[in-house]
Length: 294
Image 1: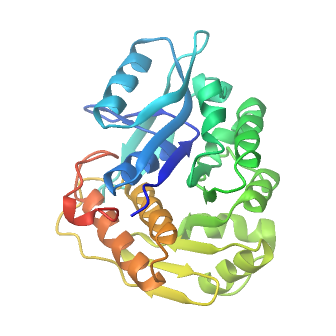
Image 2 (image 1 turned 30 degrees about the horizontal axis):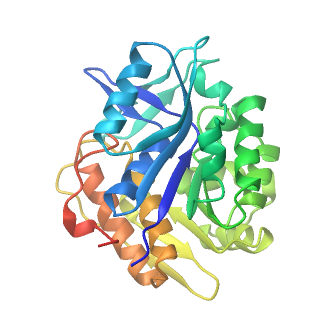
């Protein structure tokens, strides 16, 4: 079986919880989960020359992620975010301004990855600064062979219709959740049911696959000639929801690369996300039963 090389492009940061700091950032979470599913995962980002940056490098290397595409910014601190959990374990995020990933720099190794990756995931948050947005677009435009996965990942007010539209134009796969589709509906004139709104985006931007996650209520996936809904997987006890969506996205990306059916993709992604919700942090251990690339 072909060994896939999959990258997460964007922010590396620490989720600062009430009693701990957990390494995260949606793109690097995605890359980690792709690695746990059997691919070669790489992070493309910028961190600071500080204690958090050194800790991030150590923790991500311990998780077997390739970090040679991560650059160091000596003038800005490594990213972090305050993650506050509600009674259901759902996180709300508060981001500081002007940190290392706002100054995303593609080093020579990162640019070399552009011609090698089979899939790359990017989001909206890291595009809040012009420098990082240009770097992300540069990488995507230099990777015509890659499956480009846009995890919308709207945070605070760090998004605009222009940024979202430019991202959709570059994407092959869209992933967003049921809260996010309500936010963007008036921007893009989306009407009707969630399915109608997702199908409109899918068709308008010529996407290969469009994914709507619904938390504990499962998901809707629309492909080229098919669509499938999943009711979700019951979770006995939720630890937190951090990273669950990123694991879902990684599962979908690898499933598409393996030419799995939408039914297979949907079932695996929902089961994996449920497992992550039952664990603390964005990058928990993943049992071998979830591995897609043997």
